[in-house]
Length: 186
Image 1 (cartoon, rainbow, N blue to C red):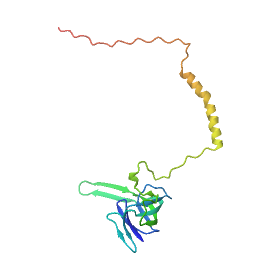
Image 2: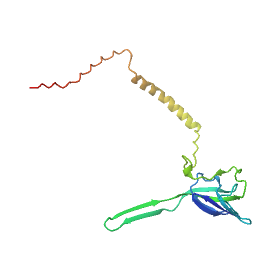
Image 3: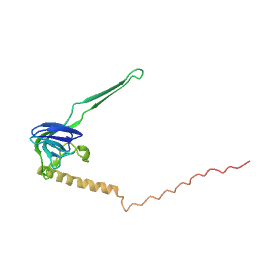
Image 4: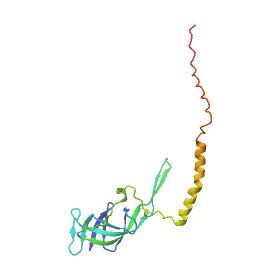
């Protein structure tokens, strides 16, 4: 059985076990995603969607987030201009392995839908890192450092606050602004 799916503005003919490089999907390595835009199911009794087949899906496992080969775009204007420009681009892709093709019941499968990264706000390709848990030795060092800083913080506060028993300096009088002299007519 094969299926024709649509993702990233392109169509792919896939079977179970195929490896594909598709436009980047918002999923990390090891996750299972499901493509719901199925255009055709082939096999003993082919089904063609108008435009999509309702309830059909293709499940895949994300292997890695990769980049394509660099494409270099070189432009040179001839004649009197002597102008040239070079630009390079590496497309971001997701490497997936097709695991299962579902002719029906894909809506109730509970697998994460495969959507592009442009649709997900704040998505990054790096796997979420868990904060390392502090060990007992690190906790003890943090407590000792906090105790050592306490007297220094009190001393800074004492310097910042003026002593109450010292006399305040008298305020300086403000200078009057000079006015331009009045012109006299002669």
